[in-house]
Image 1 (tube, rainbow, N blue to C red):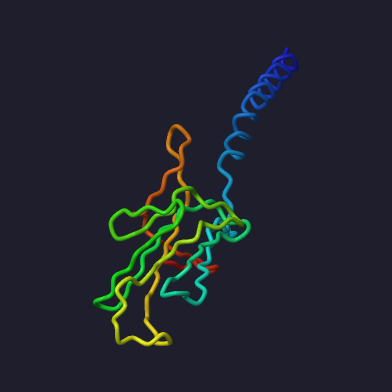
Image 2 (cartoon, rainbow, N blue to C red):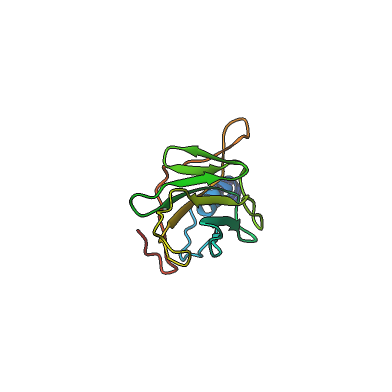
Length: 168
């Protein structure tokens, strides 16, 4: 009788341990920690091509580098006091101080040329005289709304992170 009770007790203990093992394993597999990091580069990279002006007109082209994410582009030029600039170009529209390129630019593609012409050149200016017309351009990644339409967020804050984790 003692032997029979001992065998039943051992079987009960084995049954309890067997039933509780899967939940204990779930705990250990759910709460595993890891250390270290790996940088991920999801970048938009563009280049401005600005050849020498012809007939007091700058011919600007913005190109997204191969492998770049799609971007929207805008540009603005600054001229010396007293000079007036006229902008033109296919798919470029003005909104405030900036000129925005209409469709997004995919990796390897370029925006249509933006022409910036100095209109009121003073009479006493010689043909080879230099004017410092500074062009500033910006790009922002394409965002998608709930319907899948492309949108741009020009108010986003730019942050950078270095390989060692520092940033601003």
